[in-house]
Image (cartoon, rainbow, N blue to C red; front, top):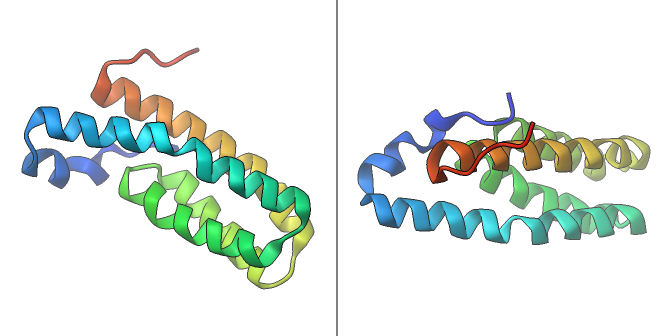
Amino acid sequence: MDFDDSALAGLQEALPVAEFRELLADYLASMAAPLSQALALGEAGNWKDLAFAAHTLVSTSGSYGLTRASALARDLERACQAGHGGEAAALLPELVASATRGAAALRARFLGDRVAA
């Protein structure tokens, strides 16, 4: 599952609707940069910095309900820390694809954007 909206239930209850939607929109607008950075680090074979970038993606993805992306980022972090470059390189496109699908589902669920088929 790329997206689990239950991860946002507490936040949705705690914030006024406009603030909640703005928070989600800000996250969605900013998520492309860390994914692009991770891809660039992977292409460069910079496993140390990629492990740190993946660690950040674990928590941010999970906080916004992108559960599969969070799990893949955790696997990526571990692969990088272990020096398993081949495994890390294989996980990167999966991570990006899952994050993209999860973001589309988040948009559709909370911001009213349609999910492309």
